[in-house]
Length: 162
Image 1 (cartoon, rainbow, N blue to C red):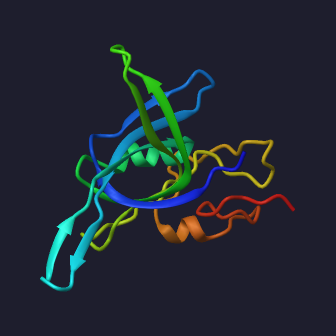
Image 2: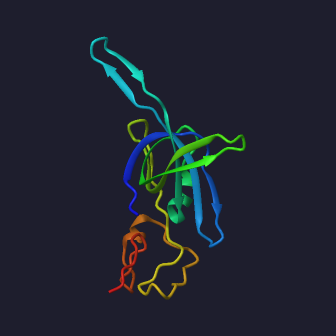
Image 3: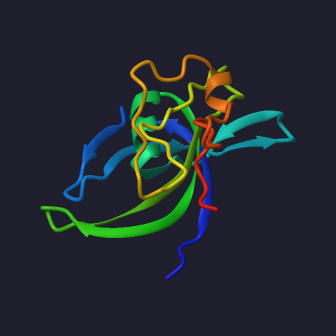
């Protein structure tokens, strides 16, 4: 089944919660609130529509970066697969919610400035099956990340099998 792809802009409602699931994958969950605004041309006034809440789930590297970067109140842009789920409360009430399995999360730069800090992979190798021993010092600058070493692999880019 193919869920629709959606992009939503909203505010983070609570600090993201990171956990590690049984298989060892990192997962981060958070919620965003998106409130549409409408302009009435006759009166020149803006009004808020009904707020829609989305549960956001991020996996692996995205999950780690989201947990380290976002906080309550941040304005974010989220793209991912949209899903809906229903459940019943302890009182027997039926509820439903919208969930996004995020493929991309970013700060909304309309509201402020951001500085990107690249995540450096722990191991890089031209052979995906063989880990490379990492130097104790590691790369010191972005130039070192982008400069291919003797094996032709750039630390700042994923390695590709030939």
